[in-house]
Amino acid sequence: MNNLSFFKLPLVLVILYYFTFNIFDNTVMSFYLEGQFLAWSQLIEKFIVNLYYLFPLILIILFCSSIVFNRYRIYTLTAKNILLLCLLVIITIFISCIFQRIILASILSMIANYNDDVYTIINISLFYFLSAITIYYGFILLRKYFQYNEIDYITLNKQSLPKIHLFLFIILFMLINLLMAKVLSFYFYLLDYDIFDQYFAYFCGYIILTVVVYLIVKSQFNQQFARLEISSLIKSACLTLSLFLFSWMMNIVISLVIVSWINFFEYTKRIDLSSLGLPLVYLSFGLQLVFTCLILRTLAKHYFSSEDVNYHDDANKLN
Image (tube, rainbow, N blue to C red; front, side, top):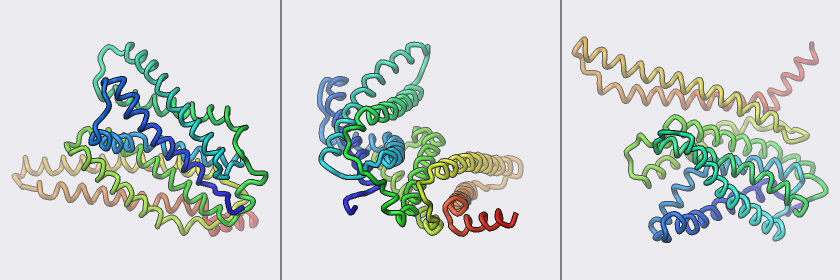
C-alpha cells in the first residue's frame, strides 16, 4: 500500500512527454527542417518556448491520465509501467507529429491567404487534438500490459480524497486560466518584450496566482466522498469558465470605457487625465482578480465542502 500513489504515474507521464518532445523537436525536426542541429543557446530558448506552448496540453494529459489510471487501478511506479509510459509517449509524439504535418498541409492548401497568426493557431490546435487522441488510444492499446492493483487507491486511502479533489481542481483552474490568457493576449504577439523575459515574467505571475488560489480554496476541500467526484470537477470547471468569460468581457468593457472617458475629457475639456488611465486599468484588473478568487472559493465550497453538503442534506430531509 505504501508504494501506491494517485499522481506519481501521471506526473511521470507528463515529464516523459515534455522531455521526449523536446528531444524529438530539437534534434529530428530541427535537422529535418533546417538541415542542422541547434546550438546550446537555441536549445535552451526552445526548451522555454516549448514549455509555454505545451503547458495546456501537459495539464490536459495530467488531469485525464489521473482519472484514467484511477479507473483501471494503475498506481504502482514500477519499471514495467515506466517503460510502457515511455513507449506510449514515443508512439504519441511520432504519430501526432507526422499526421500534424499531413493534415496541416491539407488545411492550409484550402486557405487562399493566411498569415503567421492563423498558421500558429491551426498548428497548435491541431497538435493538441492529435496528441490527446493518440495518447488516449495508445493507452487503450497498451493498458492490458500495465501492472495494476486489485483494489483502487481511493478505497485504501479515503482520507486523501479531499486532497486529490483539491489538486485536480487546481489543475483545471490552471488550464482554464492559461487558455483564457492565451486567447485574450493572443500568445503575447502584441507585447514587444524580449522572448526570455516575456515567458519568465508570465510564468512567475502565473505561479503566484496559482499559489494564491490554492491558499484561498484549500480549506473548502474537507468533504469525505465515497468515490472520485469527476462530475463535480467538470461542473465546477464549466461554471468557472463561463463566469471567467463574463467577468473578462466586463473587465474589457470597463477598460475601454475608462480609456474613452479619458480621451473625451482631454479632447473637450482640455483636462489632462492621462496619468489616471493606467492606475484605473490596474484597479479594474485587481478587482477582476478578487472576483476570480471569490468565484473559485464559492464553487469549491458548494461542491467539495462538508458544511455546504450537510446544509443541503438537512434541507432535503426537512422537505
